[in-house]
Length: 402
Image (tube, rainbow, N blue to C red):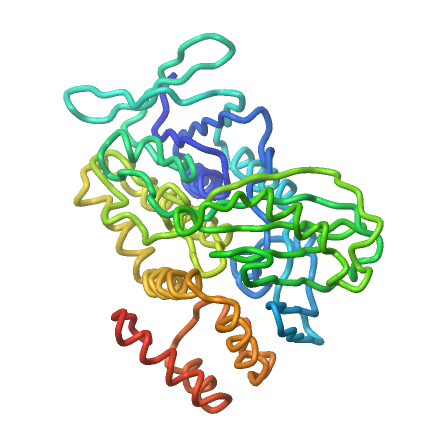
């Protein structure tokens, strides 16, 4: 099979790249090992409404959140909003919508198809070898995008990645929870709930909530599934809001918890999404970045194909574009993640006490990692002690206030 561009992986990054490239007339193939788009679910789906609107994600896939509760061993802090700043995504619905957009633009999607190896001709990548329905296929293309998630299969085969040593490992139940407030999320911190990580309760409509735990390996050896069961057994901390629940689905997922790859391009190859570590490790957030950076990759791919330029020097344009927008966000997220992963229970109690003094509108700014000069000044005015510590940490880690 002959195409201009072949994409390994039909997550949000791969599908967004496919759509952006196909819109320009590029012949695109997307290869996905799962039997259906958006399943199994590997993410809790928390995101930010304003950022998703900028990406033209339909509101129908966003379940709005107006209350956030933060719980440590001895502290509980609540933030409330009239206008919801955050949402829980309908992950499966959104991914299938992105697949529809890519298909409508002209991309061909092959599900239940497993990538085996990159194909080379004269020492240059020339497509992918895959297996489908017991048959081996050769999908020919001068340009390949690796969107294979944390595995980064193509990037590893080409020496762009050695694999991620530090990983966020999560386990989650999707519960029928008739007593949980539909617009309230909760975060759990400390050794009781998630050493070297955090727990969450994310409602997503129809009396359903995602109860999960994520921890950092190898910072801890704890199994998130066992921690998840422990939280469920201590549901009385929610004052009956998680009583009479039923398990509907079980999800597991991994996400890089270290900085992005030094190189996300090579001759004939671009790396997007989790495969390149292009995520915010502060909260383990990746979907909105995957959509946006995937579109950047698709645009550069279309330009490369029109000019017949598949060399690394040309493809670095993709790297320059995503780094300009997100490099500092990713670096700040990684630095903060490394620090809080080592917090003791009393430190979590203290940090929540500090958070409680912030105006609610500044919380999303911090959780998104948007430490611009303007935002830093707002935090300074609200809590000088908090900012002084953050500024010192940023200086030590060479994070810039952009």
